Length: 281
Image (cartoon, rainbow, N blue to C red; front, top):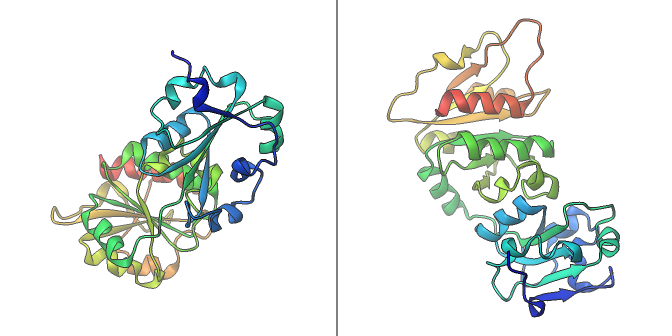
């Protein structure tokens, strides 16, 4: 493990230094609006080794790295591939705590640039080329959104994007990225608006929609048969209300995961993992 050259590191001693402002306890809304011309669509924050690794080797631009002085040797191999124009800021652990707002044990943070929203044409092209889709309607729980990204990366066909309704939690929220273990930076996603035409666009692209519900009258997932000429779009709603009645009415299949009587519906992330394992494998 070779140490990073000293001239590759930029020491920061003041938590209020403007060079580290995106790490300084800003609300997610502040980051989303963007901080400068380099990231006009906003910024997101990554925490910890594995998540930062996804940023460094992924499709998003890395703006900077913030690392505890005591961890520079630990992370030297991780940071070695960084382009020279990406600054690596080093801070004492007390300064790191002041910046982050709590005792931060992972020792490394990174800031990335949010991509520009896809145009309608690029959105339709992404959906048309997808081997499958996972569609999330109004999932506002950040943990569930992040966890589903991790499930898609593990269980869905390579290149499967996630389609979000406009009311879903942002996959690039810090906690969502962390829960996804960085896979929110790997799995492509797009927000479809207006939502009332989303299913029609998905059907027109050649997908059969499978609306997941705990309703005992729905078809058991294992019994659904999809024509070879069609692809699967798995629809998931928020816990509690589930999918909207209009979405259920327009889905091609209403499906359920058989479970023991008297047990409430599964957590949506767990249900998503089971449904992907049964539908996509």
